Image (cartoon, rainbow, N blue to C red):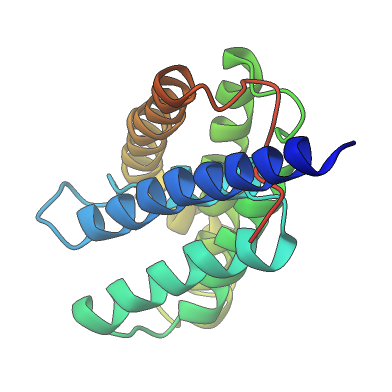
Length: 186
């Protein structure tokens, strides 16, 4: 590759990163606005970050740092560590999309991200929270009480996933970012 093409690729990757980072930061800011419970952009933001940011450190740290900044404003809570681990899992799910961001794959990743968040956080609430008896009946009650929140999580992830991935696709088109490339630079 000649020097001119290499410089163009570096600028292209930098522009891709900036567009992806801006979308992630806007999504993080939306989280602190009033919203229905669990209807937030965080899960979609984690999947989006994993999908687009090729630098693993950036893919995990950008959404988790944004989540932490929001938690500093909204308040800290007992199961934070578990929630952060769950969102890190969503980033890993997003990495599965890195080479093919087709709508069906994005939809599958969004569903899987919402499902794992529901299972991980509610199991942790049952196991560590002291709100439910540590019996099978207590676990069943915990999951059944949280089911309405699962639907909100899934709806939020679908909505914000469409906004993030759709917004990025629009930016790819407007800025000619190249639809088969993902962000490789930081």
